[in-house]
Length: 179
Image 1 (cartoon, rainbow, N blue to C red):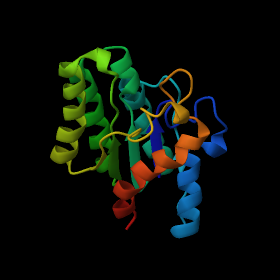
Image 2: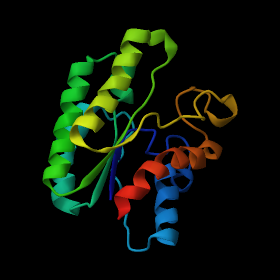
Image 3: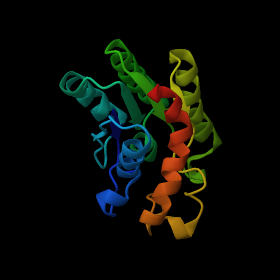
């Protein structure tokens, strides 16, 4: 299994062992032995840089599942949603062509980005997941992002105490893909 994400999956400013991806690997080792989780997440990653890195990751690891958690940095930079959709589509197609199941992980933008951009971003993930028949986590930080006790001072990244909740947002959509 590969997790291709940004700082939200790379355990930004917290110990790697406290991040949701490491917690996922620990849960899998306990519940579904035999899984290896490759965390290919990089802080600052955009959908374009993830798209460019994915082919080599697929060739190197031959994953059964690819979790794509990208788009937050595209959104924070206000990049066109058509570019995000194109990049995500290319990644989903590449992963599926390589025989992997895909879980798309969406993100929400702060309210100051306006309803048109925010709704458009949501639609990119929802429409693509439906079209490509992938799993979908609509909002990675659901139940975490608006709780200041669970977020770092930057207001963008969870503290270690929030990471188990992040994993709990991913798990229900990931578990069916394991079998």
